Length: 265
Ligand code: IPD
Ligand code: CA
Ligand code: CA
Image: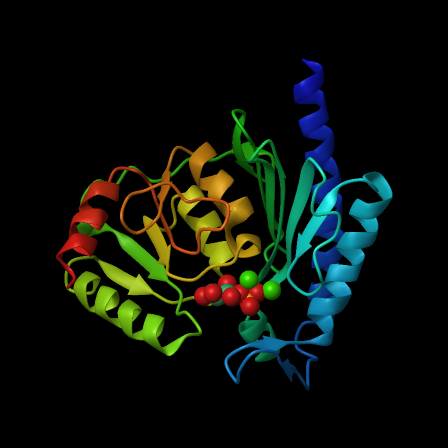
């Protein structure tokens, strides 16, 4: 094993420990949430559980890598000029969590040299741990995983999420309208990170979203790529570090998805 590969698996180990620790806290508190705060609008919730899960992760990562940068949803960015940056969503699926709906996860990625190097998504209720290291593949609970081989849109199960901004909501309704009759079906689960993990392991053929933050997608992006899938923006271009759009698929149906997107006025 090269030093570089060794370092990446050490990064992954720390990310896994942090995700498991935060996840077991979230599991323990699940079903007991009786209040939430609003952030930018009545669509945008945060709970004490989001903040505590974040504290657990930041403590664990800060202890192991005190010089690394941090971009985490519920706190201001730290050390923005550091060569490595941890990108963290301590609780993805807050609305589900606040309503006692069992679909949420923890997402942690490490970026360096402009790329996502390692990614972890943890679903604590199902004890499903999704991990990926760049160029070394993706796993679920230690077993290699791969995208589905379904190659026609008619046989594909898709999922999406709805943006906060009204104009983008409308836009996504147009896209949804285009896909509903063409795909097998379309879901809206409420956790972008878990949906991306589901594309990576072949439960879903594709997921799209018009307005994700880096912390929603960094780990899932790497998982899908390492599981053999494709990730682009909704026009088929590269998703840059500031990109908000994502179309993640098993790769086999990617062009068909993009063709449908092109038809939408
Ligand atoms: C949200 C979820 C949702 C997606 C939103 C995200 P949060 O994250 O992933 O599925 O559609 O864009 O903001 O707020 O639960 O961490
Ligand atoms: Ca999120
Ligand atoms: Ca979150």
